[in-house]
Figure 1 (cartoon, helix red, strand yellow):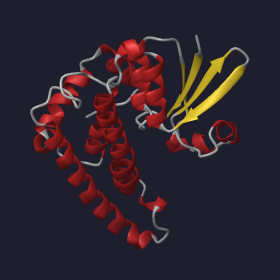
Figure 2 (cartoon, one colour):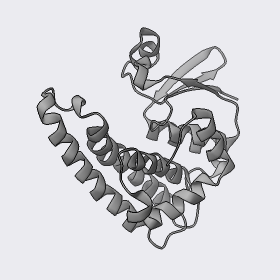
Figure 3 (cartoon, one colour):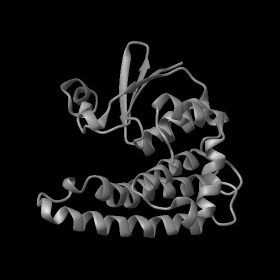
Amino acid sequence: MPQYRLYHSPGACSLAAHIAFEELGVAYAPIRVIIAEGQNQTTEYLAINPRGRVPALVICEGNTEQVLTELSAILIYLAQTYPSASLLPLDTLSFVRAVEWMSWLGSTMHAGGVRTVLRPDRFISDSAAAEAVKTRGTENVRIGFADIESRLHGHTWALDDCYSIIDAYLLVFFRWGNRIGLPMRTDYPHYTRIMDAVRARPAVQRAIAHEGIQIE
């Protein structure tokens, strides 16, 4: 069996990969790379992931090591390596629906949304204009959360009746919505209902406790 090292930062999108490992119950070593302290830009970490992002997954098999980056890629790898855990659906249409969710969350909601609110300096060097970037980013995030709320209406989980790692990925954004001061429980009740069910799962509780973070 492969051995794994998961490089993550508490509360980052890597939380979804952290939850995935806890759901699987396979042995892995979670290694903190605290973005707020610049640990993702150290020489040591850049040797693992030159992009300076988390998560990064080191897959050890025998005397060889491979590094896998990008959250969606890591989640798909884990789901397909351990299909019995049902982290993602196996049938083609449901699987691509999951990829659809991950692609949109990683691009529109993360890179083009939450990041502009939390880190506007990454998008503009003029500090005087950073507040405008943050304001527009918040508007975009609200639009995205309204989309999520609409998609989750009437569903038990993001992918209909089956829990998947998409639900754990959505927890990351639910936490970020609280972090930027949005009234998540008031404005997004269907989203909140499903996130409460996610948080009740023992694997999710273990990952949250290990990272030492608060969701709300």
